[in-house]
Image (cartoon, rainbow over all chains, first blue to last red; front, side, top):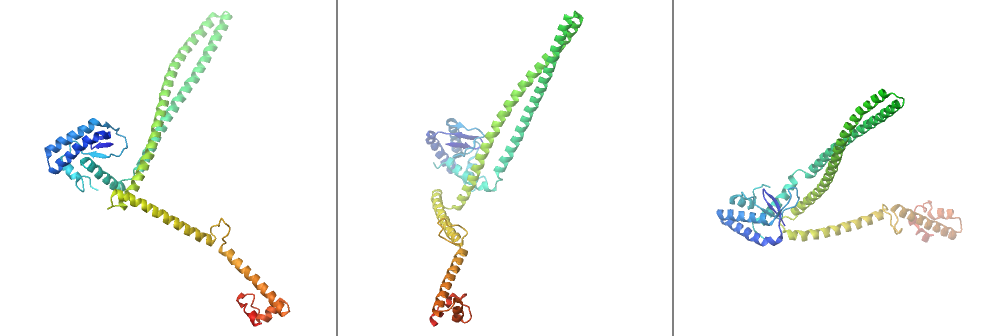
Length: 92
Length: 263
């Protein structure tokens, strides 16, 4: 499975790691919905670290669509909330 | 999975599809880039050719020097045979100067040869890269075209879930295919009937042939009719016709046949 960390690039992940990543991902969503800024930051860092640890980076010129996309490490809670709202950060 | 990762992926895919129609056509950009690479490759190849030409020129010069060198050696030998040691010495010293030039040229030659080999290798590598780019470019173009088609399909099925969209699409395709086949069958029938298409069975006739057949069939009937009239009247067919119609129109009016009853 190809995962993109925005601003960093893509990594290839074995499906076996998805269960663990899913837990962190669900936590992140819950913290985001509750507006838990500190929790959000900690979980996002943990999730990105896990993806980097388990994944193999794809070359920059690889042309693979990402199946999953993660916010960049600097993203704030508000930015991600806005991104996931109907219009999102990118208009169109 | 329903967390942030999945939701962001879905949003980005939706946006990418929407953006696709508005973005400039990347296929043209790729073709342009490929063209530039080909030009670069052409330049490298010209460089290889230039170096090879210089190497050839050096080889020619070397040959000439070596010929002169052997000539001087022969002259020295002859001079010595004639007892002219002074001449022989002169010839050999000139030969030594030539030999120095030969050595210098040989060094240059080997340097050029090395350059040429490097350049040839570089040209081959570049060629391979350009070839790889061409393949990749075609793949990207195909993917882009497919993505465009997907976007149009996606738009057509907006409001329906993805799975339903797929099912609906399959049904639509089947319906389209059926309608297409029906339309084709109808068109073929019409074309056969009009004579624009030949019937492979040879049974169908075009409208002109059919009309001619009808007319000639009618003439046969007319002739038969005249013959019978003549028999009945006991005179020539021409007389019978004139007598029968009064105005000689029966040849043009097969529907006059009932007049036979009146006679």
